[in-house]
Amino acid sequence: MVFKKFALSLVLGCSVLTVTALAQGRSTKGEKPLSISQGQKVELTDFLIKDRTTIFDFTSEYCPPCRAYADPLYQLHRRRNDLAVVKVDINRPEVHRIDWQSPVAEQYELRAIPYFKIYGPDGKLIAEGLAARQMVDSWIDAL
Image (cartoon, rainbow, N blue to C red; front, top):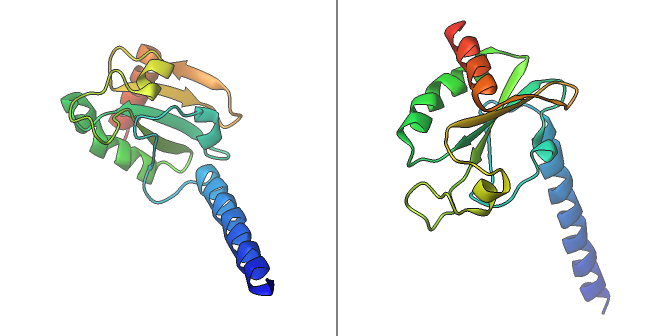
């Protein structure tokens, strides 16, 4: 009985540590852009990078224009300390084409990708769609 209580405490403690670690990883800028979703619904504000302008890049590996943005966005993330990129993969793992019916694609009513949403360091949406793409393009051009 004592062993069962200890094992349960250990499992619960590890779960709390894992959730805490995940939450901390979401709010800090890593070496590479964070990749989220895999087609599932997601609240973007849960993944804002603390004290940074956060660019959410809705993407699919089956989208040639998305693939063309991959390296420039990585370079932007790496070189600009004030910016962070978070890649929102719209594809569910079992779908091998652009997954327009995925829960996240439907959640954000995506009709074209790459699609960007940009949040300021204060957590407020500052641009999306064409305006966000123009901002991203200007930042990439300035590298």
